[in-house]
Length: 330
Image (tube, rainbow, N blue to C red):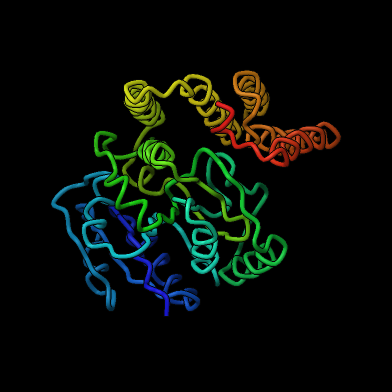
């Protein structure tokens, strides 16, 4: 039997989402052994008490909200084997963990793997999904896995909402940087450190995990202005660290990613023209990031321009077919 994966779920409040997440793990993770490490990040709504009631789980309690990085680090102190970081506002379908582990172990130089999702920034996003039940999520995940069986893709960024880290990678790279506070950019930071250590980041194209998205931030009552301030503060921390590390790829890559994030926010706000401008600027700054082309294609399709959308999808496919990752071109 393969060694179990340590699944770390940090949570600050949002007990209902915690319950959905853990219940889905118990119901849909028969294909790979695992152990649960549940981190109560100073919750006040009963999430910590719920974690204590979960059978067989290792539970860690913090006196206050240490943020995503701080909570993850508490869990990592108890981890063995490969490590799976999972947001508490996710729902996992049948076969999810086995697909991720299979992708991770397909090559020794793959350091981290992430799934596709309905709600995530960047290249892991699948647009246009809507589900009314767990049965629908499972049905989609099964069909998606069948259509994309064994497919993987190298990327320069993976989002921390669901992130599988190789045991040896974690032992080499170490803990997450807690200077990012309650969250944002700590996963970008960790991904860069993993690549600095010589490992690849990959999307397991056949794996899908449902994500509600930003429930913890919403539950904290964070305003749009507070969100923007947090993003800008943490962006500056990230940029400063990468420059000190001598990363000459940062300027174009970081600027393109920021524009992609702004495009996603514009789409959510209903401003499709602004999103269009952001994505075109992202492509101009960094023309070898395939994800920008796919996101633009999805937006053009939504705006009723299927032929133009097809052109950008073809460009993304050509970039990937050439076998060049965004990192190598930066």
